[in-house]
Structures are given as structure tokens and as C-alpha cells.
Length: 348
Image (cartoon, rainbow, N blue to C red; front, top):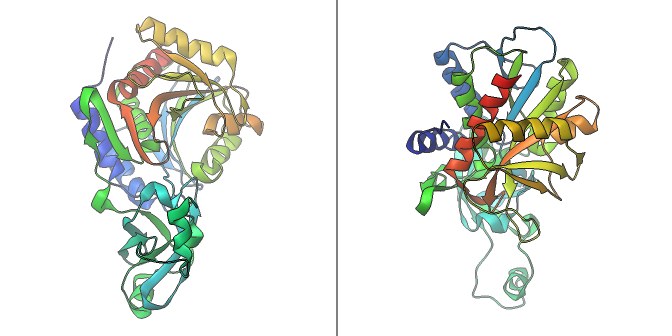
């Protein structure tokens, strides 16, 4: 059984996490990926929907398979820029202000990045202040939070901070770190760890029986936009999405080094035959896997299949604590996804 070196995998994920990529403003991660793929010497391109695609040629021209990992991360989008440099934001994807807590966030302006502090208001207050409700069990909402930049309106305008500007957690506090027993902890493991899996596959697989497309998909967090565009234009026999798998009391999934194959999510059933082919590939590599059905979840695969873009879809994932927050996953589970997919491609 091949397992990616944990230190190398950690460093690869770290480099990806440190590239900002909020939905629809993914240039920083695009630049990194295009440079990396150029250095690998693999056939690749960037399409009109901002997907980055690697093509691995097949011995046959039919039966193509796509394996996707989305490039974008959740965050916020500016609604208004007010006096004294106070900026109002709203959710972009499945983000919640209480997940980030008070701290540094980055506003990605048209001309410059401005850092500010996601703020919830002072604690030493009475019921005369609306923030008092947050001390008495009321959730912090984007409508009751704001970003303090302490910049003038002129300075923010000069940086290109405006309605529509994206907000992400600041690089000041974004760098991953290692927990005990082989775990990585970081913001945006969804889906930077899956991008690391695709990059590893690009180095391991040079040719397959059928064409393979490794798709670094755009705008997944706001509706799988990139995957839908690609799968509508490229005839595919199947699509495999790489994802996180949420750990929760409602799901019989254990944390640790065992990857997860999804059978169903909020968008419908995954294809049983394709899922079993991935399970068989795992068995060949002697990798134990878990199976799950999820609620409140969707992937490039389930969304593309629901809208009739692909006949079959599957989702391979790794168990993750604190999904869409400060996420924790086992590096071996991530590495094993590489091995499973390599074996699957070899078996085609």
C-alpha cells in the first residue's frame, strides 16, 4: 500500500491553504495551480467558467471520468462600506460569523487587500445595546457583526473595497498546524486538502484506459457552478467528487485514518456501482473505508447527477471535525484517498 509522506502532504496542504480563494475570486489559488501544473509538465487548461482542468489521455476515447476538487472557500461578501471604516458583510457559501470569532479577516479589494477585525461589539453593555442579546443566548449573525478597518472611506475606495468585495479569514491566522496522532487542523481544509489529492494524482497517473479529467472546480460553494459547466460540455461516463465528510453525532462516522464513501446526500443518491468500484479499489490497497448518508450536504458529483449532466456520480471523502470552520482531519485519511483513486484509475 502506498501512503503519501505525511510531512510532504502537510506542506502541500499548507501552501494551498495560504492561497485565498473565495467563491468567484479564485485568482490567487489559480496562479498557484497553473504554476504547479506547468512545472509538472501535464496537459492542462483553464476554461471559461474558471475551472482548471488536467487531461490524462486514455487508450480509448470514450468512457471519460472526471475527478473534481473545488478551489473555492467560504467567506463573506461586502454589503456596505460605512463611516469610520466599518464594513458590513453577508455570508458567502456556508459561513457563520461565530465560527471565525473576533479576529483578523482579509478584504480582497480590486487593487489591494485590507485587513480588518471581525467584530461583535463590547461586552460591558446593557440592554440599551443590541449586542446584549448575544450574551443571553442569541446567535451572532452577519447582520449583527461588522468589520473594523479604522480606515477612511477614501482609503478603502482607493484599495477597491466596495459592495461585492470578498472577505476571507485573514492569513494572519490561517496557517495549518499539526495536532497529535497525525491530524492536521486548519481553516479551508474544505477543499484545499482535496486539491492536494488531485495534484498528487497528476504526478502519479500518466495514462489510463479511458480519458481522465482532474478538475479543480470553481464556485462549488455557491452551487457547483464550475462542475456543472464542465460536465455539461464534456461527455462523461462518471464523476467522482473529493470532499470532506462532516463528523457529527447523527452520522456513524469515526474520526481517524479511514476515508468515507457517501451513498446519499441532500441532492440524492450516489451511483451504487461507481461507489462499489471505489470500495473495491480500496480493498485492493487494503484500505478500510466507511460508508455514510448525509443531510445538509452536497458535492460536485451529486449536484451534477441531479441536474442530469452525468449518468453516474460518487463522492470520496475524509472524516472532518468542525466542517466549514476550523477543520480537523487525519493526514492518513487524506493520503489514502490518493491511493484509492490511483488504484481505481489503474483498474479501469
